[in-house]
Length: 251
Image (cartoon, rainbow, N blue to C red):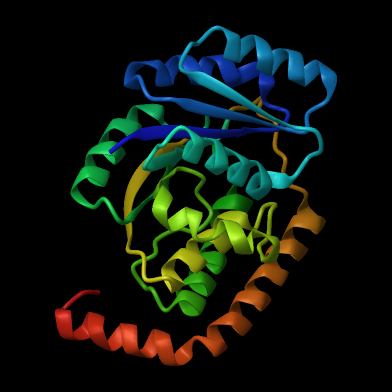
């Protein structure tokens, strides 16, 4: 098993070095994806990456959204012959000390997505905390996988074999804020097991959010509509898989 990290970066160049420093203890490759940042941000990203010999920089000329940056990182990971890729947000809101536990779980469940779900402190905005359960319930419905705890947390360890199967259909997927939902549901459709563990999440007071209320809520709603239609065509397969899980005693 060969582990690595992928860090999509858009407007978080000023805090990237701090994140990379926290990941240095793992001695795994870190793929940093510059998602079409402006010149000032690019200099910050280049400077941060240059300080760490385990960091690889992938540059996108235009902003492609979280999903586009993520898949650019996946392609680089395949070039590096990695087998598993841990996605972590560049803004430092996730507890990086949790990475070691996720790597250990991947050794136990090598074919599963090890998915984080947030344990919030007092810094979380209520609108984010209260709104995400709607997305979680919809994701469980369209995936027929009621083991899913959270579909919006950007802290996940993926098997690259599963992700590589989605590269050909990425043009069908939501590449922006709906990406985390889209990719998890599609992996569940492929029968990939999803196992969830908590990760502490903090929202810094001076943090930069890339979420756009109107645009991204519309995009996420469109994603669920598309996934709902996709679910209908997969009902026979999902029914068969559900029966198999029940027979085996799985949840």
